[in-house]
Structure formats: C-alpha cells, structure tokens
Image (cartoon, rainbow over all chains, first blue to last red; front, side):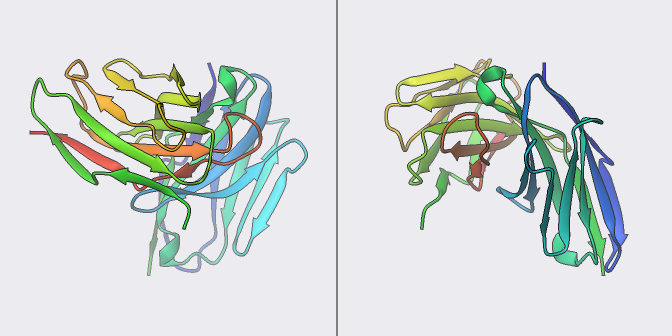
Length: 112
Length: 114
C-alpha cells in the first residue's frame, strides 16, 4: 500500500521567515510527486516532480525530489501572511491505476 | 472559464437519509475523483472514474455510491450506511488517471449530520 508522511504537521512562523516542509513516501514504481496548496477550499497545484524533473522553482517557492531518500522538500522563502495554508503532498505510482495518495498535510501559519 | 463546480456548498443529512453531492466539470477531462477530508487529515479517496460508465472503489468506498453517465458529471451519494458522514468532500478531475498530471479540484461540499 502506498504511503505518504508529511512533517511537521503544523508550523507557525513570522513574516519574512524561511520554511521547509517535508514529504517522505513509499510507493510501488514511483511516477511523480505533487505539491498542492489548500487555503479555504480547493487545493491548487504547485509543483510536480518526476524522475526527469527533480527540482522546480516558482518565485519564492521551490521544491526538490530526492529519489534516493524517497522524499521531497518544499521551501518557501520570505514568507507572507498569504502563504498561510495547508500544504499537501501526493504521490503517484504504477499500481492502483496511477491514483494519487495524499499525506495528511502541513498547516502553515504566517504571522504578521 | 473551465473548472469544476460542486454543489451544494453546505449540506445537512438527517439520520437514515441518503444525500447526493453534485460534481460537474467542463475541462473535458476523462478522469474524475471523490475525496473525503477530515480535520487535520489529508485527502482519502472514495471513488474514481477513468471513463464514462466505469468507476472503481477507492480506499474508503463503504457507505458511498457513484455514477458516471456523462463525461462531465460524477455525483456522489452518501448513503445511510455511512455512519460518520460529517466531513469535507472534494471532487477532482484530471486528463486521465495516472501519468504525469495534476488534479483540478472543486471548492468542496461540507456535509454535517442534523
């Protein structure tokens, strides 16, 4: 059974801080790892990492995949209050018809 | 604008009652999914569908049923057999199941017991 573990479960920082969120996984025949941001309602897609694309960056957010360690990190620099959200990590493997398995998420709170 | 529409936003269920949550997409995606999210937890897959008139159970299908009669619609029924239905329900779609592609989510339906 595929498994995704995120840490920490929650995090409180002040504006301007840099944060690192962790995601470790166990999946048969890994295909991809995805990061989503969930504010109030719908999760929105941030990054997808695969064997051919292990590092992604967009503005203050960046993510790296470590296939050897079966993990990924999501970095947010110069945090803003608008970064407050739940960050979800999901993996896709070849079994289970390629469905995504989600972790429990990291709740990030950025204080002014 | 393309997207996924879930309705209603809030729903209350009486004991012994079945309720149906609506999910419609105009993204022309083949695959659709239903997830349940409880406080402090991630998304757990209830059912998914790869194509019209076909669907498969996810990890927590007991007490739920679905249909996929049209490509754009994937309604979820929470039956009276689901003893703990209070949760946030999210519908999602992707171009197809599997492959290297993200899922697009609706804004969710929050279901509570009266």
